[in-house]
Length: 92
Figure (cartoon, rainbow, N blue to C red):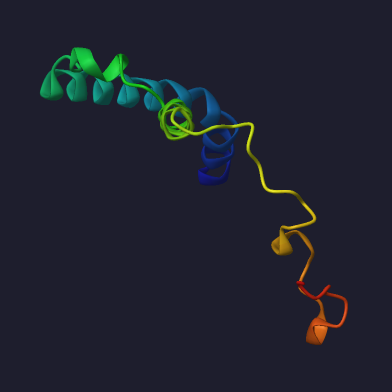
C-alpha cells in the first residue's frame, strides 16, 4: 500500500509543489515590501554605469583638440613587442 501511495505522491508532485512555491514567494515578496517600504524616488532616476562612463569620457575630451593625433609611424606601442626586439624598428 505504501508503494502505491508514494507513486501517487511522486506523480502529482509538480501539481502540489508549484502552488506551494507560488504562495511562499508571494508572501515573501509582500513581507519584504512591507518591511522595506517604498523605494526612494531617486533610485529610478539614476544613470547606469555605461551612461556615467560616457559622460566622463565626454568631459575628458571636451578641453582637448581632437584633430591633433599622434602618427602611427611615430607611435612605437603600435607594433607588438617581438622576441628580443628583433623586428622593432629603431627610433631615429
